[in-house]
Image 1 (cartoon, rainbow, N blue to C red):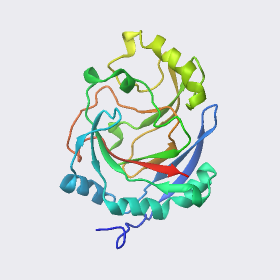
Image 2 (cartoon, one colour; image 1 turned 120 degrees about the vertical axis):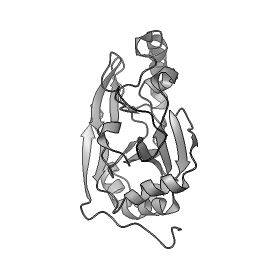
Image 3 (cartoon, rainbow, N blue to C red; image 1 turned 45 degrees about the vertical axis):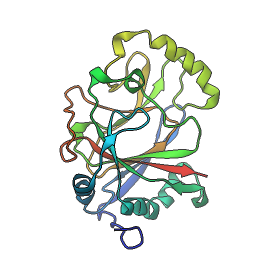
Image 4 (cartoon, helix red, strand yellow; image 1 turned 60 degrees about the vertical axis):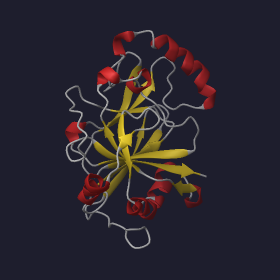
Length: 236
């Protein structure tokens, strides 16, 4: 199927809201019941997924999403993006989406995977997480760095933030574990639990992390694992 002949319809109980989180008043777009029969996206991952090691420190495996999903985002989201993030349609340029399955156990995490991260330090894109899993698989949390007060990162902030990261890296007590809520270095400022067919969108320079519970079962099967569709909306 191609974007020219198919677009999945919206769920009949589609609803959305726009939250404002943290001291820096960052918008987060939350959509529940996004696409009708979203189980088809799960089925596509099972039947056609070609999962391989993730890129850019993603702690698991990833696979390309179907083209019709890209078309659905381009069809249904622009007006909501403009409302939530104070943009115009001409600012929006969509990029391909990726299926993602978290598989890396805590004992194998690199230090950057144990703390909140950003996808960019430039205001050039928005990030989307579309959950195709059950609530017990863990959602997504947003954070404030306690010492600096930073919730978003920028080129101007990286020198001082980097200095603190070097100091905090010497404390081994928080290595080799997924952050799941506040710790001594980061304060959780927003939390969104996984819910099947929920999509959240936020600026990519916002500190965030998947909230992986301690009893999480790392399973490569898309049906029972933490399957998400991760997308970036690039801004012109």
